[in-house]
Image 1 (cartoon, rainbow, N blue to C red):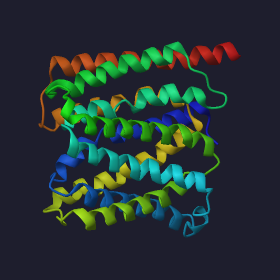
Image 2 (image 1 turned 135 degrees about the vertical axis):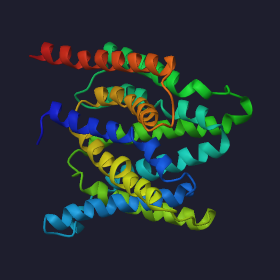
Image 3 (image 1 turned 90 degrees about the horizontal axis):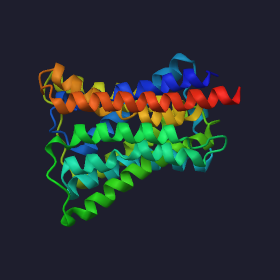
Length: 295
C-alpha cells in the first residue's frame, strides 16, 4: 500500500489526463454523438483494464463480486455524471453548464469533512475557493450570462457536480474495494451508454486516422487511466488536496489547446493560472500543518 503522499500523487495523474480532454475531443472531430463516444471510450477503458488482468494471468472475474453499495457508487458516479452532463448541455448554454458542473472539486473539499478521520480545515476551503475563482475566470470568457429560462439545465449541471463529488467522497467508504473493480464499472457504463446511443442517436464513425487517435486517446487517458488513478487517489490519498488540484484540469486543457494552435494566450489565462496555483499551494499547506500538529 502506498503512503498518503504517494496515493495523492497517483490521484493527481488524473488531473493531468483530464487536462487532455479538450484537445483529444478536438482531434476526435466533435461529430461523434455523445453517448456513442461515451460507449466507445469506456469500452476502451474496460479493455485497458482487461489487458492488465491478462498480464496478471487471470480474467478479472474475481473483481465482479463487490458489495452492492460499491457497485451503486461506481455506476451512478461514472454513468450518472456523464448522463447528467450531456443532458444539461441540451438544456442550457455550454459555458454556464461548465461553470456549475465545475463546482465538484469544491464540493469534494466540503463533503470530505463528513468522512471518518477527516476534518475541514479553513485553509482547504480558502484554497479551493481561490482555485474556483481561477477556474471560473478561465471558463467564463465566452459566457452569455445566466438566464431563468435555462434553470432546468442549471439544476441538472448542479446535480452533475453533486454526483461526481459524492462518487469521489463515498469511494473512501469502500476503500477496500480494489481499483481493478473500476474496470467492470467502466464496462457496465459502456453498455448503458450504448443503450442510450441506440435509443436516441445515429451512429457516426470516426473519419480518418486523427479522429481515431482522438477516440482511442480519450479511452486510454481521460476515461481510462484517469478513472483508475482517481479511484486510488481518493481512497488512499489527501482527498481535499486532490479536490483543489482538480481545478488545474481546465487550465491544462486551455494551455494544450494554445500550444496546439487552437487558442491564444490571454490575460484571463494568465490570471487563472496564478489563482489556481495559489489555491493549490494554500490547500497543500493546510494538510502539512495538520500533519505537523498530529506529530
